[in-house]
Structures are given as structure tokens and as C-alpha cells.
Length: 198
Image 1 (cartoon, rainbow, N blue to C red):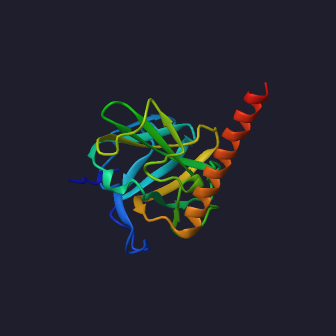
Image 2 (cartoon, rainbow, N blue to C red):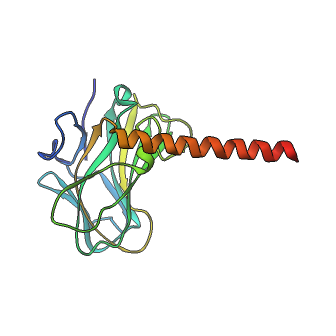
Image 3 (cartoon, rainbow, N blue to C red):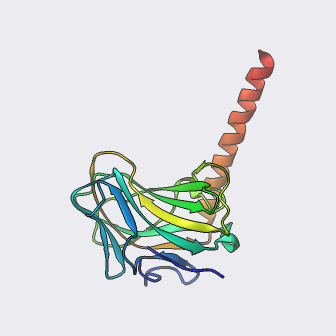
């Protein structure tokens, strides 16, 4: 059974009907670290990643019991609003499973504005194909912790997040994902040819 991650609010009104909120911000963060500690918070179902001294060098998280195994081909999407003071170009989502395998999805933040914007990870990364893996392959059926993290630069952070959603890949995202796979295949072939020639 799937349990929402209470990191924020329910599905935003601007989301497509087939998008599903898997992480919300109704409850306070369980922990925060570095420049976010004792500074960032949730309010009215929104994660407020801003404040005096809040930079890209920080993160927050919650312990969860989440099964995303039915969403392997879906793409995580963040619903964000970026404030005028933001100098951080990227926000990361980290999921950790019961064996401490960890995966990270990297989201390029939009320009500041008054509207909520839905963003997807670099290269159209799916739940089963994250931007990076640490300590093995993530077991999506046994997610025990979720974190939002900055990109570790020292710029000011001024971002609101009101949901992490699971969304079906658009044709454009599928094309982006295929282009990445093609680049990686070509690089592997180039390395193999070079090794053979030597």
C-alpha cells in the first residue's frame, strides 16, 4: 500500500489530472541540516526553503514508509515557486531505501516569478532511472526516507515547494531520455574502440 510522504500539501490545483502527489508538506520537517537547520519550515502545506542565511548548502527530510514500485516509469515532478532573492540554480530530491541505497534527482530551478511552475528532473529521469545512484540500486518498494537538498553552492535560497508528484513522461521527456541514453551508448562504444585499439 502506498503511503504519501508528508514532507507538503496535496496535489496542486494546477497539476494535470493524471499527476499524483506522492510527497506533501502537511507535516513539519523531521530534520534539517547545515544552513537550513532551524530556518526552513512548512506552512499551510508549503515547504518554505528560504530565510536569513539559507543557502544552497543544506537539506531537510522525513522518515517514511513508501512504496513507489508501481511508478517505475513515472517521473518525479516538483511544483515550485522561486522568489526574487534566489541564487541557487538547482534543487535535489533524494530517496533512501531500507538498505541505505540512495538515489538523487536533479531539478533545474526556473527563473523567479509569482506563479507556481512544475519542473521535471534533468534528462527526464524516471523513478527507476535517477540522475545519480549511491550505495547500490534503490528498492522503490521500501523507501524509508526522503530529503530535499540544495546544490551546495553558497548562493541565497528562496524557493517554495508545494508537492512532489509522479507524472507520466511527455513525448518531449521521452525524447530527452532517449537522447541521454544514446549519448551514453556512444560514449561506451568510443571507450571500447579506444581500448581495443590500444
